[in-house]
Image (cartoon, rainbow, N blue to C red; front, side):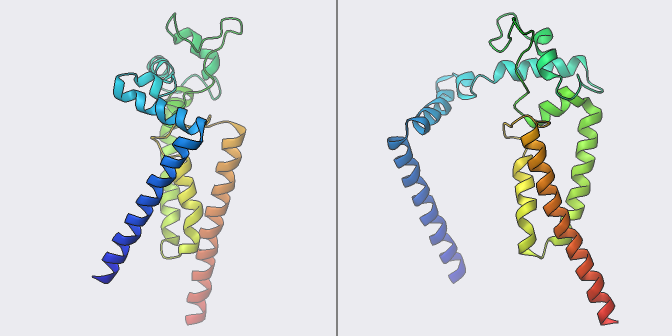
Length: 198
């Protein structure tokens, strides 16, 4: 009973603090105010404004995937294939360079358009293996941080940096290294403990 009340009190305090911080940010930061106003534009039927102009990119990505469902247009090929599939009035097409939007701005669409169903299947298989690996550390709170960070990095409903870009690749590899080290250390610790118990 007492722990539920304490949890509710902390949750209420965190909610109040969040509302106060958001209100202060809206009043004091022009950039934050512009972002909130742009997001709220969805209520007025201006969904593309709320999504920072991403609807044409996502529509073009869907057409690109439909044309190349097996293996996509190639890693980092999105920008070069974009003009071929874009509408005539697409704001992201750069006619002078013959390119379009740099990437799909959504991880599942990016994997589908650049690597097709084959790439997405392999990515999901790797995610499944990592999930199994993460289960080794479930009772070790110190090991949770890299796994949570990996989950946030690849959460499928986010809009992302280019998945195959250098910053994303470095961050992903760094987090994978930390997560796998934690799992490996846990496995070694379990093996040593079972040897000592015998």
